Length: 496
Image (cartoon, rainbow, N blue to C red; front, side, top):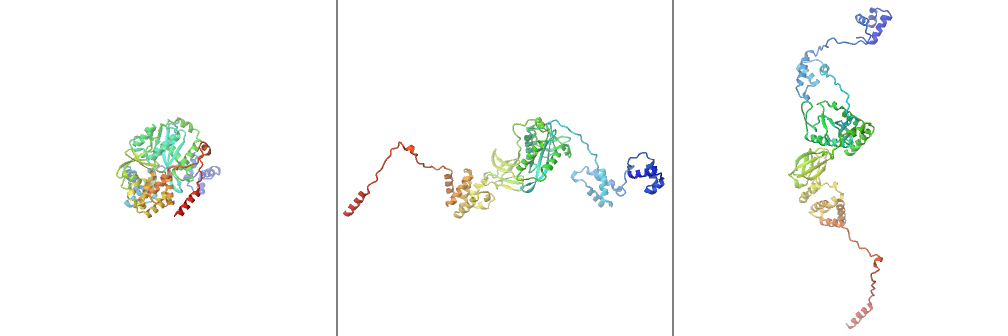
């Protein structure tokens, strides 16, 4: 096939210069029949190559039926256990003595697996009627360390406005908390929300558009009264608006990496960035007014789990352990987990509250939970993970060492001092210990006595003012005559 510039040159030589086809063939190197074909054609558009019959595969041809059979069998297999192009090539080479190249196999696979491209319709939504939700990931610096943030993004369909919140995980409680915060920021609830088939919302994908949903997710929808729709499996592009919003968040908010000290600070930064963008959106305020009203109370974004208190007075939630008072050892308790807090409940009463640990295989131990046990096993105080001197003012460990050096039961007295935190402010106890050190008081009763004095107002005597002494008679007392006493002593001496 010749190119357009060559065709132009041939036509000029023939029609303008009057050269023969033979001479043109000699000069250009093209066959006379090819030159004649283009000269006789009335079409002067760029020549195109037309494939009249399928291209043959001289090397791969005998193996094509084997490849087709493998592909057909793969349709009945799990998607993660189907043949790759590399695996098909290896099987042809090892099992069927194929001597061709790997690229020949992949070229054929690319042709037979080619799918028709899907078309999309431009969509338009009424104000307040439609929203999309998705998760995306971004990296940032948390106290100088590179960390992954999981971003919950909700985008409204009519205005295109979106809001984003960052979490250390994608668990169900974060999924619910993201909804609550977005609804509260927007001031209302859209009519419908479109999701992927997230496990936090969908228990099982059924035929067609039917889904078996998680009970807690149904509770979320029931609370806010919106309709949930789900994309077809593997068709996340059906909510392409929120996916594009996620890309915009990463591009505008996380380049360069934000450097923060906590997720709370990161979310404050994201809030400010979202507000800055939405202030430039002409439809945002109108769409907010079109949203349905929020319920009177927010949704309880909590995940529940049951556990039994082990012999170390701890319960395990996920891979982490949290302490409870020792009297609950062996009891079955309920764990209420939110994004940032773990609450442990026994018979409707909260017995412990911890800040949630976001790492793995870690412990959160509260010293107060173990004081009764330490009172009986006080000799172990210095070697237990429960007592961490660095968590207390330095004077505590200094006083404990002094107690232990002077009294075999010093650690026991120290545990009793720690129990005083249940009834007195920490600052007051610290002052009492410092005074006990200053006055060399080394026992529990002494510290308690000082503590009670610090907590009691001292009576102060003040002099009467002169104006209040006007009606009080003035009494004058004469000084005694000591001479008479001296004479008496003298006369008595003479008689002796």
